[in-house]
Image 1 (tube, protein in one colour):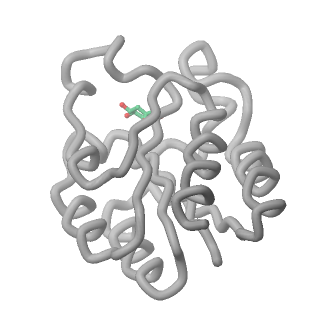
Image 2 (cartoon, helix red, strand yellow):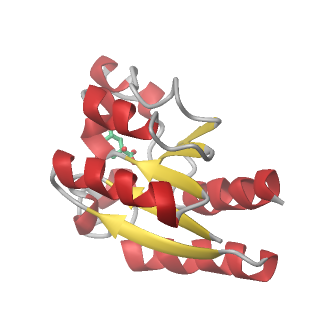
Length: 143
Ligand code: DQA
C-alpha cells in the first residue's frame, strides 16, 4: 500500500527557491515527514518530482497500478494543466492537493486550480506540513 507524493516544476529547488515563500526545508524533508506519518499506519510513500508536464502525466499513469492514493503539488501546472487533471481522472483512488504557500493570498492567477475539482481535499499555506497532513488523511480514508 503505497501513497505517491507527486511534485511539479521548480519543486526540485525546494529549500533554495524563494525561501521567504516556500521555507528552507527540502523535498527530502517532505519525503521523511510523509514516511513518518504513513509507516506506523502500514503505508509506504514514494516521492516523485518532474519539471515536465508529460512526465507528471506518465507518473500518474504509473500510479494507476502502483499507488493507493496520490498527494500532488503540481506547482504552476496546477493553474494551467488540463492534461494533469485528465490524468488524475484516470486514477481511481483518492487525490489530495497540496500547496506549500497559501495560493489564495497571492496573485490572482494562482487562485484557480484545475486539480481541485478532482481532489478529495486541498491544503494550502501549511508549509511542507501540508504534505504530512494530506498523507495522514490518505491513510485514514483508506483504513
Ligand atoms: C505552489 C504554488 C504555485 O502557485 C506555484 O507555482 C508553485 C508552488 C505551492 O506549493 O505553494 O510552484 O504549488
